[in-house]
Length: 250
Image (cartoon, rainbow, N blue to C red; front, side, top):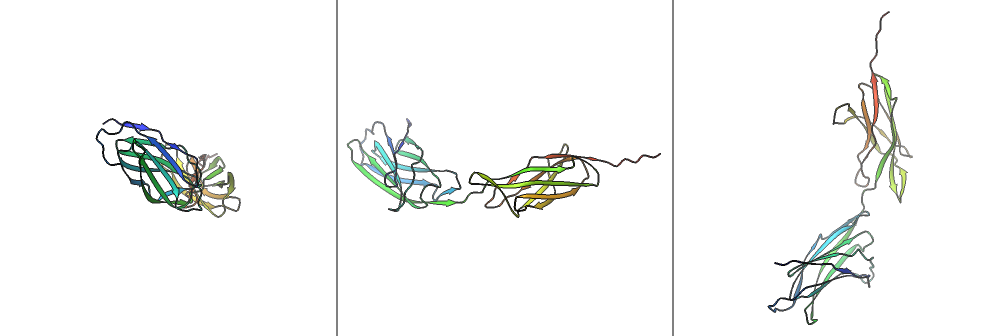
């Protein structure tokens, strides 16, 4: 089977609709009745998370079609949506596969996928299906800055003091995160495993403090595990050298 790949064109939005168009090659030598059916919309529902884009594939089956147009529009007279990027259309025999994308600027709710198929004489047949678009709040980006384990050299059994700052990105600015737990982990030289040491809570500026006894030389880092709304983050590591007590006689 000879496969043909055509690039679709997405028009400017008119009345909140997206229009995708693709052209076909020579029609089959054996004439059959013109028909069209939207076989699948995947995924359905379309879930848009945070500022991300969600790709959507619409598969259309036809017979005797030389051109197929696909319109995606909110099932509401009051809804409006922005123009998306130009999609790709893959044509393989009687299968037309349209790929578009949705983001948070698109209407949340019920949508229609409307496929129009045309034969070489200009006759048109139409099929349509419903699908839905949902918006979900994504995890906000976080970071751990100014992490420090002090002093850099300490005698065994003495205190190591940890400090740093936990921030969240809001409207392109970094703000301190209040009342969140930050954990401190330790890794000895030559080891690939991080071991929990202690933890501290952030203040209204996102600053945290913690301390632990010194036992062996190694590196420390701070970790924020995040939650449903806040992403996880980890600080750079900071090395601490632990010295043993020396006993010298006279």
